[in-house]
Amino acid sequence: MANLAINTTQNVNLDYKIVSVGERILAFLIDFLIFTVYLYAVELVTSFMGAAISDRWTVFGLQQLLLLPVMFYSLYMHILFNGRTVGKMILKTRVVKIDGSPAHWSNYMILWMLRLVDIWIFLGSIGLLTILFSDRRQRVGDFAAGTVVISTKNKVKITHTILEEIEEEYEPQFPTIMRLTDKDVRVIKETYLIAIKGNDYKTLNALRKKIESILEVSSKYYDRQFIETVLKDYNYYTQNM
Image (cartoon, rainbow, N blue to C red):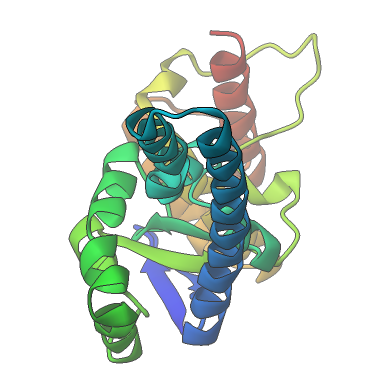
């Protein structure tokens, strides 16, 4: 299984597992099975109505209306469930941007439009070939949208997100904390956790100096305490906005 290696501003590599071709095909087949069951149900409904209604155009119009959920399935599922369809949910995979951040609805729109090229034209051979011969297992739609499909099988704890547990009576220390973005805080926390795990005090200090320069603050806290306070402050302000 390939890895998506992301290098942070602190030169710390973060790896995300990119799913294999087999997993992508299996996820599609699960979704396709759902399509088949749904289309069978639509056929039963329209057949019953065809027997009850003499106007064939009315039945035909209803049939086309009932087919819309299948046509837009990939688009609305990815938007509603953060880059996942039912097949992806079952296999614990999801679509994200190249940098590992959540994809935008515009990315999903590009993916959906190019399914015609990747999947439906030439019976999926174009999409399959591009996935096989690309380093990041991307189909044409992924290249255009700037996305990849990664595995989410590892359990995600609160320590793996930008979220921090803060007490109700917590008082923030740095008023300029909102100069940071969600992406900044995610990189800060991931770099911090890696540095703590490896006892990399040099990286902790470099990270602390970088944050201080952005926030334009100077603190007497130790490096670890300073970074933890920054994370809590950001959560305090974002959760109470």
